[in-house]
Amino acid sequence: MSIHEIFLSSPIEEKIVWAETSYQAFKDHFLKDKAVLDGLEEVKNAIYVSRRKMREIGIAGICTECEEQEGGSCCGAGLENRFDGWLLLINLLLDQELPRTRRDEKSCFFLGEAGCLLYARHVICINYLCKKITRRVDPKKINSLQEKEGQEVKHLFLLNERVKRVLKALMGEPDRLSDNGKRTARDLGQGCRIL
Ligand code: SF4
Ligand code: SF4
Image 1 (cartoon, helix red, strand yellow):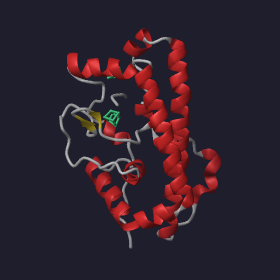
Image 2: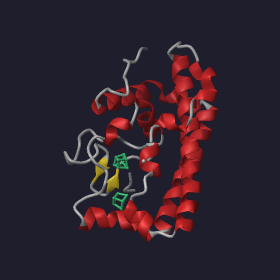
Image 3: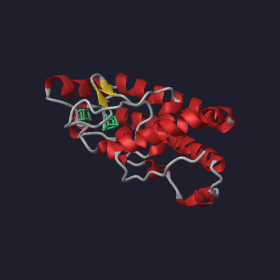
């Protein structure tokens, strides 16, 4: 089976269709691959740990104030364009459904009523700390969060590379992971909040 090509510049709706088509066609292959399965577990654990830390140090509450009292979060329209199809496919592999429509034209496509609808987020979303947060939260606590977020980004990056390798092998494409040393977690993109 062939899957139509998409690019980082493709509209988000097309990336979602690509991720869903790839998921439906190949989910059994992905879920039989031990490295993908282990990677999904690592990512789930890392996301759980970093989000728990965000709540513990008060960031989740500060972000909720923005949404409820200050006219909305910083998850603005256009941020969804940082996502590529791979990260959306990883969300599906983590059992996270993708939205079909944007809730608010001024907001990110993935912003739902109660916050971000994605489980696996872009590095930008994971790392972003606004001035309000850095003013109000103890720097030591922020450092400890950043350590956990570093693990989240690392495991997401490794899983992303493995998922690519499995799908490209299935499609008969050459394995481009030989440029391993040149790619970094930055390739997942870069940080916004709302959990
Ligand atoms: S990260 Fe965004 S939502 Fe959270 S407090 Fe800062 S501006 Fe508000
Ligand atoms: S955290 Fe979620 S809603 Fe906010 S910009 Fe990132 S993907 Fe969009």
